[in-house]
Length: 162
Image (cartoon, rainbow, N blue to C red; front, side, top):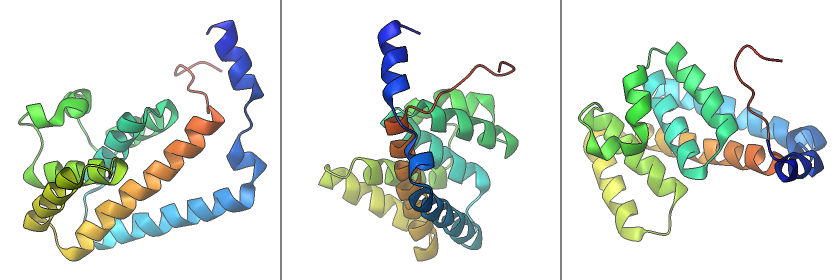
């Protein structure tokens, strides 16, 4: 790590630690969203794909690390994780997963109204209202966690190291 990166990271506060009440509220939201997703019958792997894709778009290394491990625990394959950033150019994702990924991207980058409408229409074709709502909530929540980790500069350490 360069000296400027080390100094910059050292000057950051972990806002989750600095404002624990606000962070606890975000954790409670996350728990509620996890319940909503399960009740809507969204597969855990699909939820983790959404978490990962949003974290890729936002460039959140910490959340990418956390959710890659969660996706693997949920049964996701390394092939699919490896090509997730280029999901449109593969045949490895189901129509429902593709719709969820497009909707998550529209939530994360809402300024493209045409892409947003297209994503919503694709989601409508494969998901129930409860499932659409759950996918949107998953994307909204991981966006919030991404910002917490990015602004705090939460570290990602090599596995097996202190």
